[in-house]
Length: 236
Image 1 (tube, rainbow, N blue to C red):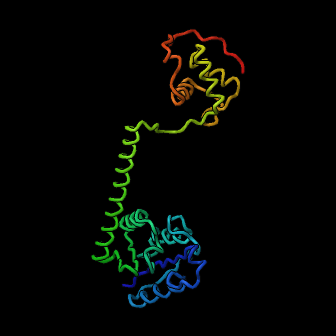
Image 2 (tube, one colour):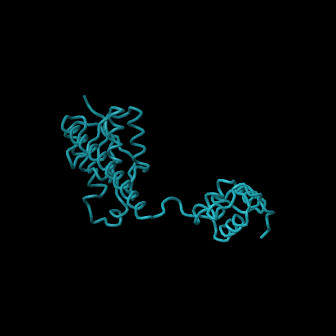
């Protein structure tokens, strides 16, 4: 039975600037795919060429077109001359392989002899997906270890303080003078002072967060009564 294969070709921006590098040129890829199609008696459907596109992600017009054709069941597989023309990311390639398995189409990379319609091809594909999973777990583990070491070293983690220093000083001064968190929030809202994220309304929790990230609540640190009656807000 004749297989219909979507032929995908990509030339990177760097290769586009070096036309003498024919190994990654468009014509070289076309020739390799046509030759294999003749040997395998495939019917080829050519995807739009992604010329000058990076392989670091899958947001490419030609590749999206190819994947849409395959998802719609209008072809049996995807063929590329070189695996790195399809993707330079092991994780992205593993995701694409999982999509192919779910939608029941094959992936062929001529340079590595990968054809997931064969037993050997599926073995190679499974190895690639296992490596991708291992890579994700290693990155996650290293991130967790790095955060733990940073905490032990006393490094302050989390989002940096985005409130302008004059606003921080104003909040701390009002808190030191005995204003409640709610009173400070209401005054900042009344004076139309933007919040941490550019909002218009301040809340007690927002004020508390600013105090915590800028050295702690002076009202509590000095042993003041948390139920202290707020002083009249002073305009600044």
